[in-house]
Length: 109
Image (cartoon, rainbow, N blue to C red; front, side):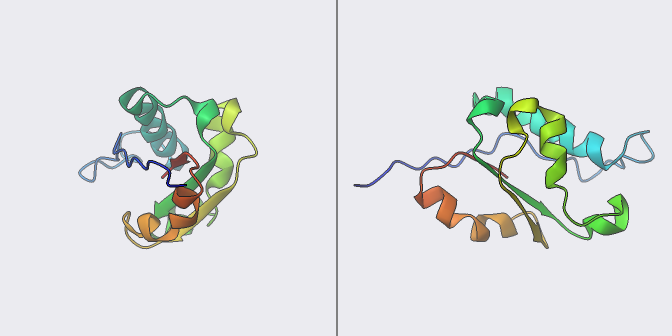
């Protein structure tokens, strides 16, 4: 059986911005892009089954390397879902989530 696969580009961070100078923090950046992705894709937080966080040197700015704990704070329906962080550029997550895509899971990346 072959499943249909859709790759959606719902939202991304603004590389020209500086969240700290704008009065925010790493969580605000994470929350803002996640919240923008939901209406852009039509996916509800309760539908997300796994999260792939793609960033570089997150621990340098946030003081921690695993940012998956932010998910439940963005929306309670995402508390406790599996998360993983992929070091390097944003596109690195595409190479690290094929198992979820093949399984038909809805991923937030």
